[in-house]
Image 1: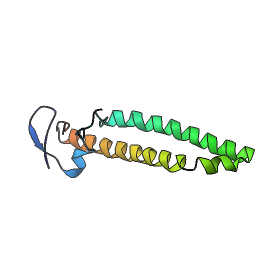
Image 2: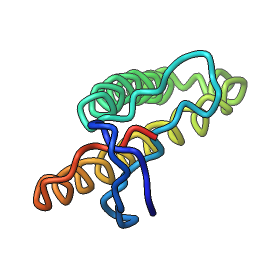
Image 3: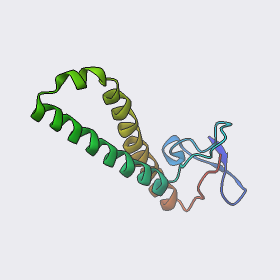
Image 4: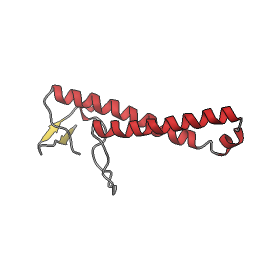
Length: 109
């Protein structure tokens, strides 16, 4: 796939060298798509998952299962972004290493 690199040149990347999606998807907020940016988000989501685990432990300790029944939707809503963030971090870190090995610029689109 041919994409625009950071230096303004058109560069041919393989699927593995490209990494995660680089364009903004026409959104208002620019996405974090560097390996370090994705790592930051993944760590934040990991902290959030720690809070969710703490909540589950408290529900078990207090036998307050009715609370878990009312907020069950929080579990899949938290687990999906957590898994996606770590998957994208691994994918982008691998792509960055492959680009560095071939001395290629980071794609910007």
